[in-house]
Image 1: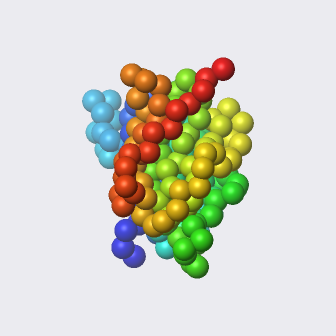
Image 2 (image 1 turned 60 degrees about the vertical axis):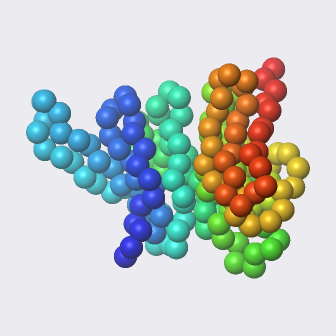
Length: 182
C-alpha cells in the first residue's frame, strides 16, 4: 500500500509524532529516543478501516491534547486524543462540491483560531468553510458558497489581525475569514 499516512504532527508535550491515516487503517505514533530511553517506539492505533485518501493531514490544539484530521475523501473529521491514543469520528455536513459525483477532495487543510476555540477547514472541492467547535465538537458550515474545484489547501491563523487565512490552490485569491470573538 502506498501513501499510508499524510503528514506528521508533533505533540510538544509528549514529544510523540502522529501520522494521519491517508490509506492506512490506523494512526501512526512515533516516540523518538530520549536520554532516558534509547529505543525508537513505533505503533499504530485505531480501527479506521482501509480507505483511499481518507484524511489529508491535520492540526493539533493549542493545549496539545487533540489532533483533528482533515476529511479528504472521508465523510468524517478524525479526532485523535493524544493523552490516551484513542480516535473518534466527528460527523457533520461534510460533502464535496456539486461539480463532483464521487464526493472526494473535500478539505485539504485548516487552521485553529485559538481565541474563538474553533478549527476552520478550508474547502478544496467542498463549497463552504467547515468549522469545529473545540469545546463541543459541533461541526457546521459557515460563510458563503465557494464554487469550483481545487480552491484552497492549507492556511494559518494570524494574531496580527485575528483572522484565519486559506492559501489558494486554484482559487482566484486568498480566503480571509474574519472571526468575531464575543
